[in-house]
Length: 352
Image (cartoon, rainbow, N blue to C red; front, side, top):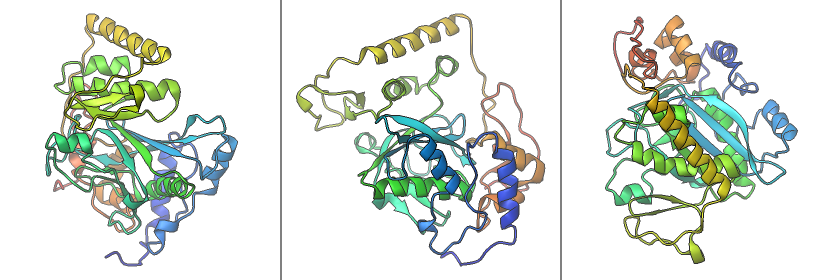
């Protein structure tokens, strides 16, 4: 159980992260004093509330979360006064583990990829990583395929063994935003977890990955959201994701069974998907590829700068109220998505 104790470096934590992340995160962090007791009730920062107001949003309006592994970013989208969703804020991710690709087995250190729904019962105000919400992995499709694993979260600190860690400061804000949306009447919110932003360039770079067909299934949902700005409707059938509206509202009972007939896709979505594939093919014809100097997981560059300059102990202290150790700090220093890049040496003596 966590103790109600304020670490002496509380102000240092907010200062260090705030300075380095000012260019990425669109408004200020939560207060520099993160109380352990009652942390599940921490309010949305006033700067973020003001930003919502300027964007035609209210704290109670519905929310959607997108996660990108390669870029180590988490996005929070909210419904605005037009009824469509708009990007409210982007948060840097301090740590995720594994490689690009879906989670399949308990203990494989993989962070999930796919579409998930989170309700209020999956919010944990007493998390050992400050605050968290459970993605709900495995979903129905993953269970049908025999995938195993549990307690895959978005949480605080900078340590991951299959989760997405975004630091205590930022999880406090994200948690408050999704909590207020659920309190406002949203039954659950959608989380879309991707290997990378589904651009033609990224698809070309990863075209020879064995997970490519799975990623193209996810891209169908990605494209729908990019064009329509509404959480894409989806179901599981024939062992894959299917997005869109089935004829007569029919739903596949078996995630591995036959798909029902679907309404024709919206023309704008078809045009985006087709255009992206054609551009990917042109890039491949031009010989675009990416050799990965891969180690383990990823870390947003703003956190990597702190780690390289100050070391893992300092990063632990500035991202966690209880100084949870940074997981595998040496691996975190190696950017796996820059061709030929080698790990940077630090004073770390032990990988976690």
